[in-house]
Length: 275
Image (cartoon, rainbow, N blue to C red):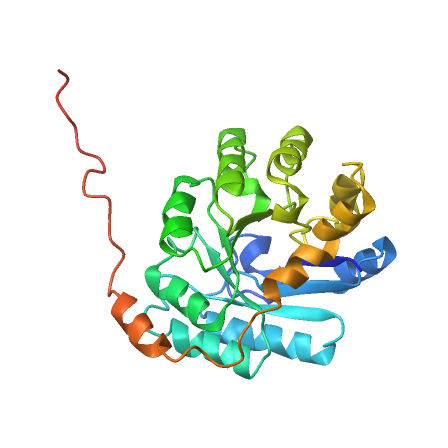
């Protein structure tokens, strides 16, 4: 089985670029099927209201439940105070299997991490090269699985990607996916040093061609059992423990973690005298 663990679907409500305009699956599904991809994880394009966008993705998943999985997209700032309610609906009603967060929207919060912990959900967090954050979340939430896509940088920041390999090695709860990684040697290095069990196959569809992204895994030349880990085994393992009902302490823990605004680096932009 081959599972694409990273694909957008549905309409955005912006006109900045493809990422917030339209993520049509029409071409993607034909390409994925031709490449032998059996199942796909879907989450919305960028949207001003992820509750609305998640609902639209849920309709797509429900139309072909044997073909799609769903992840709930949440906004760290706009959705403050309602993340638990949004994810509860996504898990209990839609059958979603994870949470998607993007640094473009805002930095991941304790609220999001506590909700993921409550439902035992993996979190796909696109850090946009801000790999240092991984150290904080991995240590603060060792029982939450974090998937950092693109090896830490879709923008081809090789420094960030190299740094993420170290986090993959040191933190048992940190994983990555193969989507959009252009420097093949770094992908190869990540698998060699961290192990095939830390990497998931993803395409960042529908905008990247799934067959092209799949070739990157094939040409790694791995033993069949390791290749199968990347192509589906790791995703199935990381989502096997998802809870349809939250843990008993969840509401209190999420309430304690909620803050009305993002904390800022108190020293950002300050000038310090040289010695």
